[in-house]
Length: 253
Length: 196
Image (cartoon, rainbow over all chains, first blue to last red):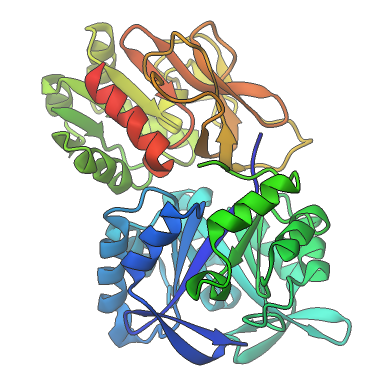
């Protein structure tokens, strides 16, 4: 039986893993390669590394971090942040990523999704969407959540899938880092609209939140960062609780 | 030496990295001569069946078939396993290796496609590639098409229907999942391949 995936996300700034609340107030949480291996050993089904600095000067640091992380990581490894063109994606794959996540660049130029998918396969292209509740709907934000786009998140998810995305990584900006639960309304709306897997992100705080987003909101995977870094909840414990609640997970692993 | 065949389909680094980790001697190559000289052959690949077309007209197809019929341990991973069959609905004009009968088909519309994530394996006990792997072990899949049921099935997974997770006959092995991305279970499977 296909299981629900628990994905550990590492937000990286200048070569270090950090975590903020609502995209701000960053705290140091360690070395990317060490964090990734520790999470994988603890039962993470996948690792996502997001470069949140994403300035031109940081590309070399990012590629070094990918190489160091990929060397001893044998679960799927996604990298995002600052991928603007196909050459950026190629460099990230070459350094050892299995999938890339694109966000702002895909909104600006949806053709980029198909270009990367055409060369590396749809399974390697994750379109990340940052959305915030606005006037009863959900609006897409880009540039690390700083710029509103006026676009509807559900529409955009549908378009991204049609362009060749293999998965949608859907982050609720309202819930990011708050540990107050996933935005199930947002996740369900997207998961019911697209036929590709949807990864729910933003707001994970307890096992109950994961049970809810898998059962009620039909997420295929759920991603969390803050709760895993500071030992508030470890992945092995989370998986045991999901298993006991009859959510299909890779456990024991 | 293990030859990992590079025909431009996706990222071969991760497959090489896993064999490196196991201490195996591997070379990534697009040269038929290097494939012919290798002791073992790995045909990896992710993405669209059409990319297998690059094996044709380059001498690689012939080198693969000769290696396979000559008794060299041969492992097809994901698209590489699908190549072992006659072809795929995904791209009917591309002819597969036709070592096993039948064509690859799409998953039923009742399930999301692609099939992405960790799924469990029901393993036939005589499976050599999966020797020592516990029943219901989880492995990582990412694909939209699946191989047909054949007598060569070594392990089954379920997604909308039961499908071939692994096939084998003699020296020929195929896995639809990605052992290089399946944690310790996957590394054990690759290690078995180094020893069959």
